[in-house]
Image 1 (cartoon, rainbow, N blue to C red):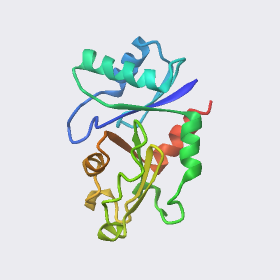
Image 2: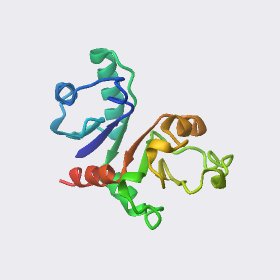
Image 3: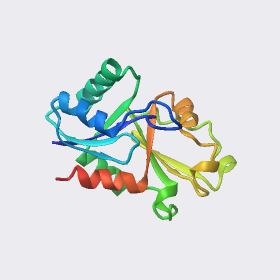
Image 4: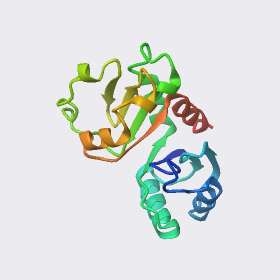
Length: 177
């Protein structure tokens, strides 16, 4: 099966540098096949018999032992990515795909995890939690937001890795074949 691997926080601001050629080599050493990377921000699609959970664990451990970096990895199947794209709860509002993001979580947080946030305090930005994905509309772009990744991780009490809508759709398409 095809599996998307989403690495959290690599090649951002000069931190946690991993060349995509090194990532491909590491994934190949783990036995993954038909490896494709997307952009330079930690997106890979692989062919594997591993479950998503097993791939997350194996890739995290390999990065730690080989590259000496502690990197969270979230994995999604084609079916899961297709469900994310189909859900699209903010699609009518999110008119610019580069300002629309999905934060991928390892597990679904408690349903009340974001109840303490007042949406009006962050308007026109908004969000919608659906299962283990957080859809976020950055009306004015991500450069000026208070709703950065660490903000969400603190609120949800777990690691998250976000991708813009264009990348989510591309990952869905690449895992389809």
